[in-house]
Amino acid sequence: MQGVSQRTSGRAADIVKFDRATFDHTGTDFNLEGAHRGLTCVSCHNPNKKLRDAPRTCAACHKDDDLHRGQLKDDCGSCHNSATWSGAKFDHAETDFALQGAHREVRCNACHVGGKYDGTPTRCVACHMPDDVHRGSRGENCAECHTQTDWKTSKFDHAKETGFALLGRHNSLECGSCHTSGRFEDKIENTCVGCHRADDSHAGRFGDKCNDCHGNDRWSGLEYDHFVKAKYTLLGAHAKLDCHACHTADVAKQKLGTDCRSCHTADDPHGGQLKGACDNCHSNEAWRKDIRFDHDLTDFPLLGMHVLVSCAQCHASKAFKGAPTQCVDCHKQNDVHKGGLGRDCADCHSSNSWTSWEFDHQKQTGFALTGAHGKAKCVDCHRQPAAEVKLAKDCAACHRRDDIHLGQFGMQCQRCHSTITFKGARIQ
Image (cartoon, rainbow, N blue to C red; front, side, top):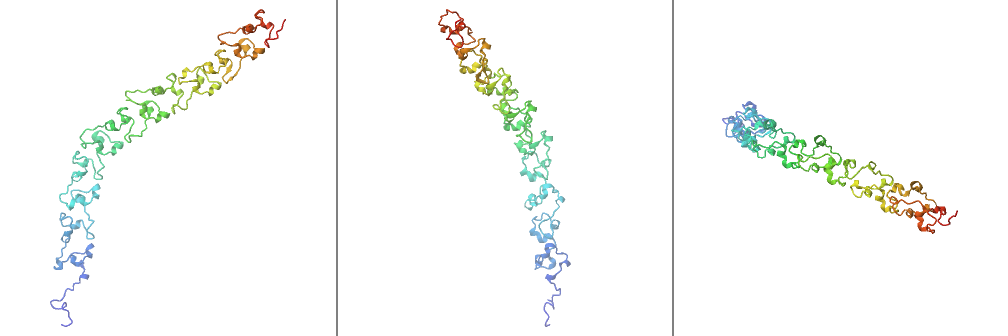
């Protein structure tokens, strides 16, 4: 018939009226969901086969995409969904190895190398042998010490198992720091000096009880209570000294005294002559500074100008005990009398000034200096030490050479002469 397509009549007529673009797949036994909706028909339906022959299982279509290579059977939908092939969900607890702790964050390939799932080991050592710092010496039961949360965090009770508690910084050490052989069954030292002998800056001088001074939290920079431990308080410059400045030998053999001389004998410039304690004059702050000494407590109090004199002017050496105490011992070169008036300078002179002197000749000698005698110099009469030679008080004793009478009128010159002048004698 004219006007009728061959596709609409006869044996070749399209009686189904199938339109691929508008076909509703929900009417079939395979509803298109997720990413399946965007696929073209030929993605699943082979053009050379009937539409009803298209595969219905995941594995049938995705066999070439199966990274598991058929090891996880054909039920892809138990892990994957139709929205996306990646990001599969899988309840590992349904296997013989539930994922706990850090295992939950591990990618599948970390344990299932190359996508191999059959025969995957479940024992710790099977996976962590390369991480075993013990090199197998602790056996294969890693869970005795380690947890699945963190491989480096150990639950091993060192105090209970070994009798040595890991305190302070010991707790953060790697096992190999002490167990250097890697064999934990080997016996190692459990005393401080046993491990820290090489760190002992005291070279064994303070014995092997390191914990008397050091703690587990830090080895250096600790405060040592010298008073509590040694009954000697470190004050002033002593507090800044290194231990070895005083403790030069083994403390068990070297018993140090607590007095200054125990340490400072070699520094004593006085040669040991000053029997009192050094701290009577010296301080702990500085040995040569702020020296204090009360001279008034000695046999020679400092009076007058002596207060201003430096120590070295009288004490020629540091042996202070040997310093002279007599005036003439220090002032001999200033003695204008050349020793003629003896050694007791203080009879005339004052410590306030050497040139300021006061002497009452009548009161102290019984011979008043009247007339011209008052103008005479001491040495005019005192030509020898007064303490050795007592001068006579009669005129002839001094004026015998001036006696023109040659002694004919006796020794009482004052009967005719006066002290004002020798000439012009009066005659009675």
